[in-house]
Image (cartoon, rainbow, N blue to C red; front, side, top):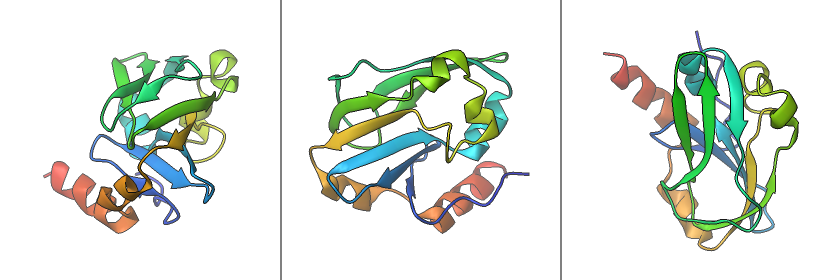
Length: 132
């Protein structure tokens, strides 16, 4: 069973989370539900610093023993940091998807895009509907 999704961030229907740092930057990662579906994550292809992304554009790739999945950007922006720890320890995403398992930090170009994303309860309702 998935952990409760933190209420301090927004979610996409593709199972990414995004947290607004309040300074024009956001941190993104994949949800606990997503890491559960992927099972054991063995490799993460991190984005290059400076990469420009649009909403629902692949920003990273997560490879598990089961499959390879794109990680999509929830907002328009520029990659300003990638979680280098994932290169040596991709399993951090399995162990702590909302903390140490973050994937990238973006400088947002259009912060209003965050309003279109799901809140925690909306995301949980989406998961519940998806499973029926």
